[in-house]
Amino acid sequence: MPNIKINWNQVAGEVANLGQEIFHQRIQGATDNAVAFLKMIEKDTIKLHLQLAAGQITKEDFDDLMLDQKALANMETLKQKGLTQAAIDQFVNGTINILVTAVISAIP
Amino acid sequence: MPEFPSPSLQSRFCFLISDPLRSLLLAFFLLTGCTNIAFYDQAAYANAVDLKVDTLALMELAVSPYSSQTAKIESVNLQMQKAYEYDRGRPMNETTVQLWDVLLKTDPAHPENGLWPRFLERWRKNGTLSPVVISDKKEHIATAFNAIIALESGKNRS
Image 1: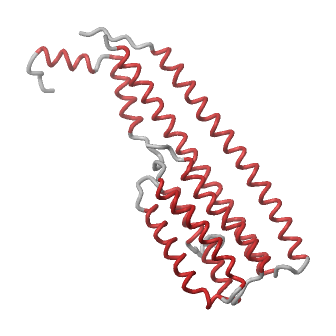
Image 2 (image 1 turned 180 degrees about the vertical axis):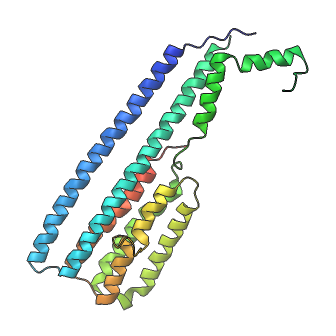
Image 3 (image 1 turned 45 degrees about the vertical axis):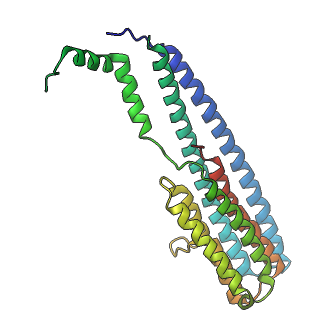
């Protein structure tokens, strides 16, 4: 039987580094996006209240625009969910590459 | 349990299921079955970007009567339907379709949904819209398209 020796410590280290890199970026991206989105909503809400007070928009317009904000919050959540799904796929594919490379390099 | 026909084949099989490789193969087959989301698609990205530009340009026209712009409205609606169906036909693309649903589909259970048809309905009902309302609505519709574009752009390349 061929003598296959895989360095599991090295494989585990590479997988851990990959995970740290990908998920650190994802968490940072999600945090930055959430902060930017909340700032945008805050600014928009203040603007809409001022427009309503100044009579530039009706109450009906205001209510409709506030509904938009709720829809946009849902969309932001969905976007982050999708980007996280993509990050998980990236990690899985990277892990497969590491495993395959480890096997190929271990075959005498 | 069937017997192996020859020692050489049995030996090869033993090689395949030797301990480290067995774990490796198991991990491989588990991981390859775990794709979560569609890959990036250039056509889908272009559809969303083109539609964003066309939609925002159409919204500018809401200062004039709805009835005078029906041809342009129908044209943009048709493009939206095509982009939606394109994304709906892609495997593992449910999250993007859910984004399109919030933008395009009204839902009595979720009155906030249907950003675009709600805009059209206000335009149709009022005849024209004020520049202030149009400007506010344009910001919201642009943000909605940006979410679809950002997700497509953030998907993995195959």
